[in-house]
Length: 357
Image (cartoon, rainbow, N blue to C red; front, side, top):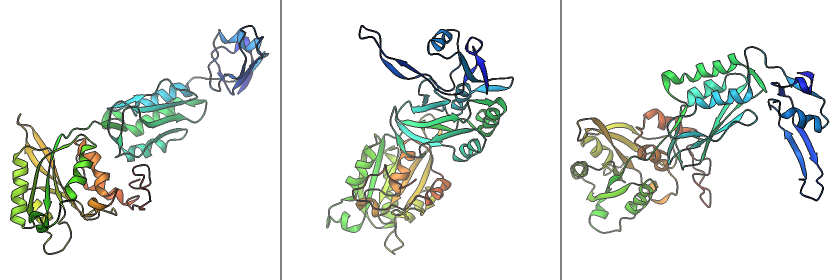
């Protein structure tokens, strides 16, 4: 920081806000009181007469020498690390900060490990909302900032190396909703025989509909493993984008849904998740070939009974990824253990709550 004559300050960075007071004259001249120039502002030739009119004949400024970058320029470079699919900058940087917003609806995904690596670099930061959740167009996703007014370029370069966008892609992206149709297979002999009303299917239909997924096929084959496997095969034959099996997920002898899904040919990602409610979740995939001959996958999930009567469960945590066609890995579920305990708040405010976060 150094003190310079205002006339000599062109190109320098202001070290603090500079307030201006305009009393007004009641004849159209404006009244104003507040910061006329913000900290971090780069002084231009047009600013000099304004500053002099404010009584500022000398200014405290930062001297941006070789290898130094102004905070706004650094913020722009950090934002590039974040601008993946469905992510847009929210205007120009201000005071070294720039926001990132969602360009469309979808699931927000963050590379957590690389985000940590970037934030481990001194004097820079990137803050995001929790990944894995649904976002809408215009939602705030992230913000970047450089801590000092002027930063060494090597600091920004270190963050860029940590992100390694060229090799690994951007730190975040928004995948749009992809799945359109689903089949629901309701287990339980009591449902198949009509002894009780199927209350599970309407709950699942409503959850799917939030992401634009229409239930186009439904069956209630009972509890027999062969019948369940056959129903799953019939559902696949209709060409649905997703198969959902409700109930029959515990370790009771007559709960055959996991075995039926496996018998139907699914590749099991996990049976069990560190989430309450919903520990008995099963996630798997059928490896298929689409009409063009390209390899694709069709997700299949086995839902425990808690999904029917709890407002928020593990299904609500995995469904956004599934709906966007993002393959769920076992690691994705393992990482849900921290934050995976629902507190059963009344009233339920999910997803604006700690569950899954």
